[in-house]
Length: 191
Length: 191
Image (cartoon, rainbow over all chains, first blue to last red; front, side):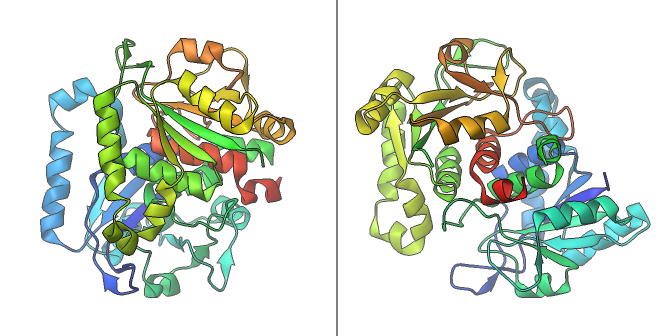
């Protein structure tokens, strides 16, 4: 598998009114998405947030998980958080990945909405399998990634098609489902 | 689709030491799993907890989501929570479903571990498609459902096979992935 990165974007994203905002870091996003990331073999999970104070909160949460009591009490959570890192911007994230991989990552954005030129999960699996570039999957908090991010990405994935018209999964659930569809053994075996 | 129910079991479940415990209700389980449940067309999502004080906490959380401010500010969460209900025991849950459906539900348990006689996701999809009975999927909090629950169930689903040996998804992520594998349009179309 290619080296796969996930970025959870807190700015620029939309709020319910369609305004461009910066969302706050949610503690359980860190844990749930790290655990999903470890499960599906991600190389790194980036929390992307421009605000220094939020970086302090991030560091504060992670500091606890570096203590002996955390290792003793919940080693699986400590393991999962080993894949987490913080970037201030998407550009900074790209630069870090490029430095590590000696190659620009392919950027794939995700959204709960229909847009022009989205690629299917099947196409995305093939793309990830055939590209020689690392891959960065971007997920938006709040009400989703700003249009500018989609426009600058290489590809945008189709929304998760379910059984209903309700499309308000938590970002934690959406990341879990997308990683499962792209990287699970079950999916490959049954196809 | 059959009438599908999910139960999130807080007792009897295991803790990390393998002891039988009663776990506490987690606020974000209510929201995330309701939202996943709405997305995949669940009929109802049961929080199963034997403790009266926890029932009060459950009611307190839901009371907020019945207020006008919640409807105004976040109608999609209010919609999602319309599928949630509370039962003290699995037996009480079964009785409620039987009363509503005039038929005993097929009970399918889930686990992150390998056990004897587990059925695949493919077999489960076929089973749900062909049975005339409603279906209750049970998920464990803590370190998973007590053995007695598996033994009394009709079937136990295989663990979510991913790309690694790390099998410590949050229950919120596990429910999202299982519902997606069993009920998503994408899965059916690509098979």
